[in-house]
Length: 395
Ligand SMILES: *Cc1c(COP(=O)(O)O)cnc(C)c1O
Image (cartoon, rainbow, N blue to C red; front, side, top):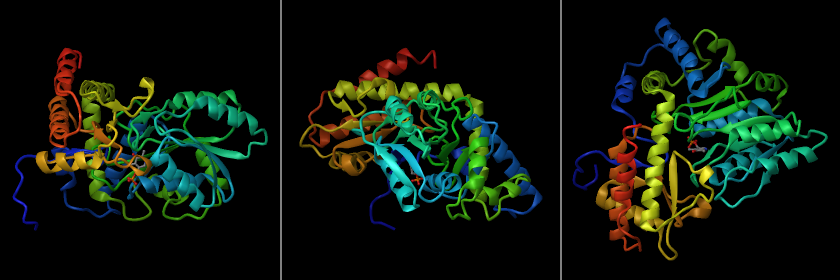
C-alpha cells in the first residue's frame, strides 16, 4: 500500500477509455465464474452474441475475443487478407498510425494517405486513389471512425460512397473502438465489411473484450485469406458460436458485464445515448472556447462526441497541467500521444457520464489551469452550465 492518505469520493476517470464502469456492470461481473462448456454459459453466450449485434446495427455475426481492441485490429486484418496484399489507410492520428504499423508487421503492404492529425478522413482522396487502382490491387480500405488521439470523428458513410463511386471492390474495415455506443454507427447500412471495437470505452465495461462485426463479403474473403492465425480465426469461432460457445475459454465474467451493458444501453435508448454524448461534447467545447484555448479538431463537422483534445498555449506543457489536476482534484485526463505529447490534453466525455460529472470534470480542468499558471480566461464551467441548462429539457 502507498503511504498517501485515502482520497474521499470517486476518482474522476476522464480519459477517453477506459471509462468509469457503472455499479450495475460491476455487480454483474461479480457473479461466480461458471463452466464455459455448460448450459448456463450457453444461455449467456447466445444472449451476448445476439445482443451485441443491436449495438453494431448489424444482422451479421459479431465475433467476441477475450482481448483488448488491438486484438480485434489484428483479427480484422488476419482474417481477410493475405501476405503482400495492399491496403489503403488514412493517417488521422496515433491510432491510425498504430494500425498501419500492425499491418506492416503482419506482412501486409499499407499505403498511408498522410494528414495533419487535426482532420477527418478525406473521402475524395480515397476515391481518387481507388480510381487509379484499375487492377484492383488494393484489397481493403482501413479507417478509424473516431481518432482517439485527436478528437476527430470521420464520416464512414461518405467513405462507403466514395468506394462505390470508384466502383472498387476493396473491403471497408473500420475501427470504432472509441465510438461504438457513443457516436451513431451503422455497420449494415453503411456497408462496412469489418467493424472493430473494444469493451472499455462507450460500452462502459472494463478492458478485456473486443469485437469484429463482419459482413458476408468479409466472411467470403476470409475463406481465401492465407495470413497465419488461430486465436483470431473466425473459422475456429463460427462452429462454436452457433451454439453459444467459444473455441477457448471466453472472458466469462466480462460477458456477464456485456449482457448488462447492452440492457442498459437499450433502457436509455441508443439515440438518447448518442444525444447525451453530443450534448456533453458541446458543453465541453463551449468551456474550452471560453477559456480562450484551441480545440485540436479543425473542422466542426468532425468534432468528436467521445472526447475533446485541447491545444495548450505555446510554452505550456499539457502533462504538467494533467499532473496538477491529478494531484489536486483526483482526476485523470488523457495525455497527448506521440506527435502530440505535451501539446494537448484530452477530456474524455464518453460512457457513463451525466451533466454533473462533466461539469465536475470541467471545473477540475478550469481550476487546474489556474494552479498550473496556464494563461486562460475564467468562465468555462459557466458556459458549459448555460448550455446544459438551456438544453436539459430536450435531453
Ligand atoms: C483505445 C483505442 C485503440 C486501442 O485499443 P486497446 O484496447 O488499447 O488495444 C485502438 N483504436 C482506437 C481508436 C482506440 O480508441
